[in-house]
Each structure stands twice: as C-alpha cells, then as structure tokens.
Image 1 (cartoon, helix red, strand yellow):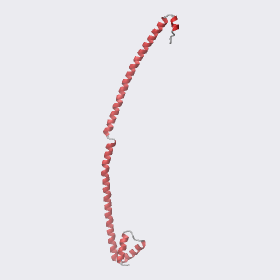
Image 2 (cartoon, rainbow, N blue to C red):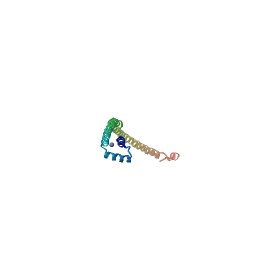
Image 3 (cartoon, rainbow, N blue to C red):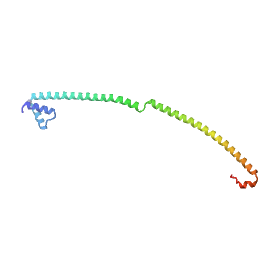
Length: 155
Ligand SMILES: [Zn+2]
C-alpha cells in the first residue's frame, strides 16, 4: 500500500468511515511516514475548521430561530393579554356589579318600606275588621233570639 492509498484512508478516517483494522494500519503507517502524517494533520485541521464553521452556523441558526420565536411570541403574548382580560373591562364589570348590587339594595329598601306600609295598612284594616265584627256581634246579640237560630253565626 502506497501513500496515495493512505491519503484515501485518512479521508475515510476523518469521515468516520474507517474500520478498526484499517485504523490500526493507518496509524502504523503514520508513525513511520512524515508525508502522510502531514497530510493527516492537514485533513484533520480542515475537518476541524469545517466542524467549527458548522457549529457556528448551527449556533447562528439556533440564535436566529430563537430570535424569530421571540419576535413571534411577543405580539402573541401581548394580544393574548389584551384579548383575555383587559383591566378596564374588569374595572367596568366590577363597577357594574357594584351599581347593580347598590340598586338592588335600594330596591330592597323601598320594598321593605312598601312591605312596612302594606303591613300598617293590613293592621289598620284588620283592626277595622275586628271593630266591624265586634259591631256585628253587638248587633247580633241585641237582635231577638229567634232570628239568630235561623241564621247561625260563625265565630
Ligand atoms: Zn505515507
């Protein structure tokens, strides 16, 4: 196997396509051949730089993706906040609830007054009725007994 073959093997090694047997063979050759050792170093450094470039590219890519996600998320979050519960709606709702409860409380108060008035009227009417009943009873008692039998009084 000459040095040209070794150069092929080196590229295979760098591409991680080399078998363990060939790898041992390669390093045996490299230990004894300066040219191939230089070739190995060169290809390895090229590969290393490529990896670094790839890493930088992928990092840049990730950063760009992250940035674009952030750019997309920010208005999304803003719209979500304004969509779900804007503060002024909460305040307006609270205000409306307070007004309604105040109004119903006032209505309840007036209802109480109405009820009180109704009770007073009812009591007055009841007293009137009682008075009338007493009057009727007095009239009945003053009437002759014969007429009472034909028309029994319900007490
Ligand atoms: Zn060689």
